[in-house]
Image (cartoon, rainbow, N blue to C red; front, side):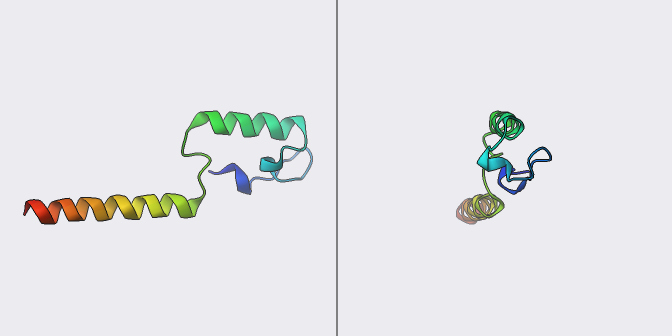
Amino acid sequence: MTYDRLVCANCASPVNEGRCPVCRANRERMQQESFLAGLNPMTLIALLTVLIAAVALLAHQTA
């Protein structure tokens, strides 16, 4: 899950703004969990599309 859509239960603001210590701590934790955690869903879809196209091109060239 990306943290840009999360709302803090402590201050009711978006977590990515980091308005309170709880937001900042959760934002830091989520950034350290995975390098893909900070990407938005559209970027992940675009990367997946490029990967599928590359595999299809490779399969077509070897056949």
